[in-house]
Image 1 (cartoon, rainbow, N blue to C red):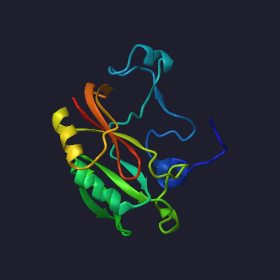
Image 2 (tube, helix red, strand yellow):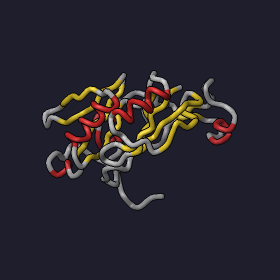
Image 3 (tube, helix red, strand yellow):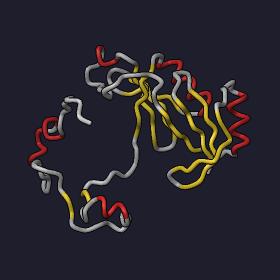
Length: 182
């Protein structure tokens, strides 16, 4: 659905975009072959073509927060994440594994116009799933020890790697947090 909102294109944000070899600015580039990891219904949906660009992983996500400090403390205490600050405006991030969560204060764009946000700026609207090597029993015991209310679990779910056992809770902002064990 298009609500009429316009967003900057890569071409408008990167002046040298036209100079990139093999990059078409007139339409999305495609190949005429299906890569080995795509087949069946996906190949039919793509009409025999695949997009040249394929994402590899998520690098970071951004959570809009009413209280960055309280949110950072919750993720450090409950999920063992490491807090860091970055950039000239000392933004706050939570690092875990090879990923991070940037914590963006609601209304931050007024003070930091370079920090863009989604079309709806709302704290507590995310649904995130984190994977741990702990057992489901250890997850439950840890959440209870931290005073976190478990809203569901243990329950069986299907994640990116297959079947997992999950517990659900909410962070201090109201985001739905799923903690899973494969």
